[in-house]
Amino acid sequence: MKKLLLALPALAVIWAWFFIATSWIDAACLDGDPNCSEDVTVQVTIEAGDICIGATGTFDFGTFTASSNPQTVTGAFLDDFWVEDLRGDDDWYYTTLQLSGDLVSGSNSIPAANVSVKTDDTGAAWVTTIAWTANTRVVIDAGMASFQSLDSARTFIKRDADPNFGIVGMYGTMPELEVIIPAYTPVGTYSATLVYTLYEN
Image (cartoon, rainbow, N blue to C red; front, side, top):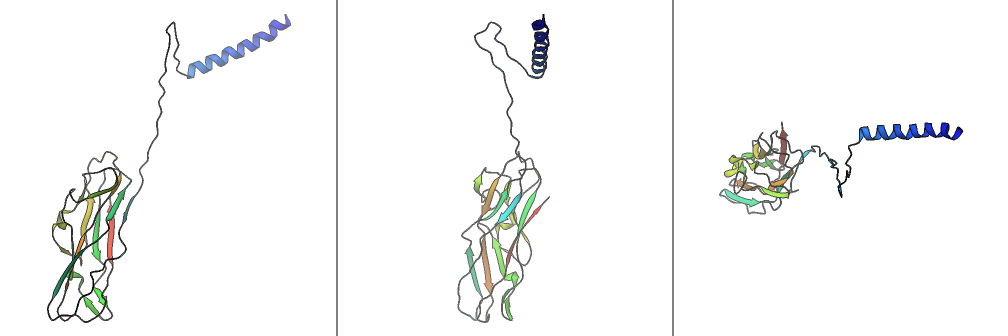
């Protein structure tokens, strides 16, 4: 009789555990079939990251001889100005290019208005997908179709507010610069800072 009394609590514990376990877990049983299966959901969530920009370090038009005539010089960057979009949301962003001021050599200068920027094409056609997924919503602003002076901020790479479907990637292009060197510009090395800026919603 003692053994029976000891066994009953043990059976009760086992039954209670089985009842609790099976009440929380979906089950699949053979029920006479040769096999059975159970579907289990496996998931991972990717959260939005950041949006970053980057560019090459320097640009050099080269060396030219002082002249009694204006000189127009053009050149292209050899590396991309890029946007890395790891946010993938539907909001807009855009970038601009602008000179910080005139090209200066000591007390002499070439006006910032004499320096201009353009790209070979606009829209999505001239955007290079540097990494990951192409995105036709990332475009070169239409104003970049012809040279624009850099004494004002010029819209460059952008994405308008539209369904973006979570697409992320790195996109860029290599702009061209033009400088008009005025006649009788004094001898010297003239420089300024080209500022590449990102704005977002």
